[in-house]
Length: 209
Image (cartoon, rainbow, N blue to C red; front, side, top):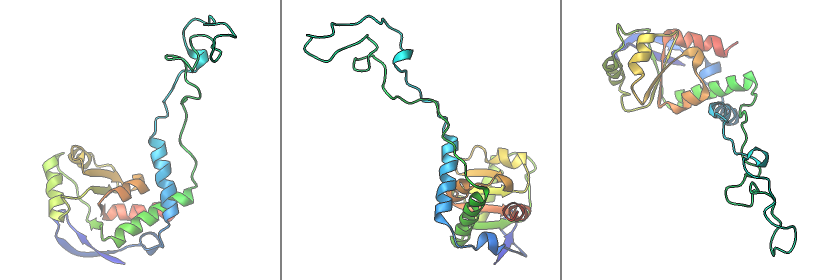
């Protein structure tokens, strides 16, 4: 599949690039996408929730009442979970929510996400460019030139571009990443994926290992 290449002013350069069918035109695997997104979100969790159990509570261990004849349940010390201010039974403990996912499944998920972007006509290829200085208004002008200023934009670059990153940092609907940093969640979360020519080659190299 061939796609026209635009410049940063939104004008057609007359050039075309051929999208690799093994990446941008596969049969999408929704289950692979689900697993990859689930792993990504699980990795974002801190897992620091903690509740004190009975042995961790501070308080007297004196028995509150006699064993029998009280007319109710037997109570131990003041740290008992059945009392207000007592410990919690089976409360949350610090844990790691991450889990393993095979590389091939992750690759399939990213290919499926990229395929969906092509099907939705939400993939824009631009020629390599950079900003002379980090200016947010330049990035806004760039999105306006492409006609995508009202959408959530993800720009994929070949390498780290500090000026580009700083220009988009203050914009809620804009994100800049390198081609090697692209993940399934980020691709699907973006309304439009903007890829530079060099980044397109990097994506081919990464997903066709």
